[in-house]
Length: 289
Ligand code: C5P
Image 1: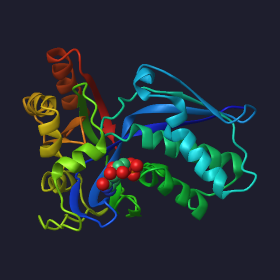
Image 2 (image 1 turned 90 degrees about the vertical axis):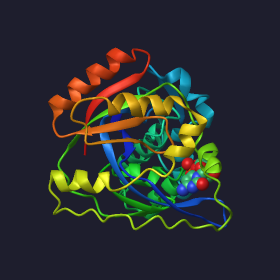
Image 3 (image 1 turned 180 degrees about the vertical axis):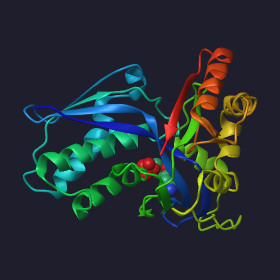
Image 4 (image 1 turned 120 degrees about the vertical axis):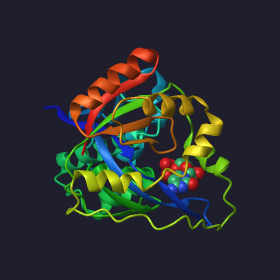
């Protein structure tokens, strides 16, 4: 028996950096959503705990010992005596170090599979605590649904029933370590920046109002990431030149950027245009939900 789950890309539709905390982490407010593009994770309960990685972006994923899939599995095993584990097989399709939470989503997928194998609920405090211990973006990826996240990612809003958005994701092939981008933002210890309240999304918003809410937000990491990796500016410009885009922005700490469109056809046409102009980039048209 092989257990399987998808580990979808996480997109930060907005990402407001509010404060640098005394512990060095930054408090955020972010509206996240998940894409139709994903890694795939399988678990073979008959095998010993381990990880094999294959797929188009496997070579960028680094050594398997440092992979967040194993970190998550070990974090849960440390909290649940006698946890049944197994051999993980990760098919890596998402770009790595790319601001779309690939590694975090893989780790969350591992927790989902282990929870299923062991009859644990995803709201079990041991699963939640293992997610937090694995990385800031892991908790939101455990139930991959659009919602607000706050704090360092440890505070999650309720899932939103938003209708799907249509997007193009474009990664210009540069990898950015998240801590370097936070550092470039130059917050002093304890410093807060008050750049306005994050708009509050709710289920009553129709498509247009939801997109307007996203347009009214920002990614506060964009300028710092762009100064470290100017190719991000190219991605924003190329997406910004496509017809009928509603929002163009970077996700997470970069380097993947996204543009939103009102329908699937516009997104597909834009993706074809971007991929044609930049054949060396990773470009995908996808629904977000
Ligand atoms: O939690 P995670 O391991 O993904 O974080 C990696 C690094 O990114 C942290 O060590 C910290 O430097 C930075 N970070 C931060 N504020 C956050 C999340 C991450 O400063 N909210």
